Image 1 (cartoon, rainbow, N blue to C red):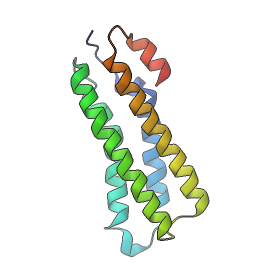
Image 2: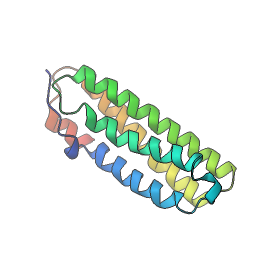
Image 3: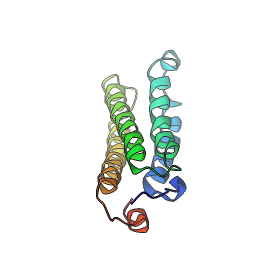
Image 4: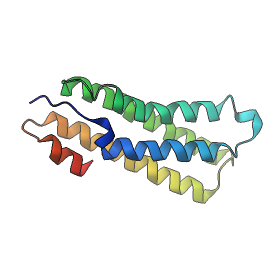
Length: 132
């Protein structure tokens, strides 16, 4: 069953927006010489997460939606790596590192779960919304 998805109702999209906002706020404290390096990469990666969830959600193909969820998941892994490097370079505190890592991993799990649920036939969209 192919279902049209309203991305604004997806909890994973909502959570990824909060992650984007928090990433922009966090990276404001980075050194000026990192603005065009890791800050730029982190911001692009976090924007890509929410954008890819939204991009294909309006179509009627679960297959296409799963493909874009894969891209969003890849961006989440990219962001996680950049947060680890930021911690290694002492751009963020251990507390910020732990909080961000937890938030990113939560989004990753939500994307993975949504992607998996789209692979199963007979799932109802309203049921998916309650989980993700």
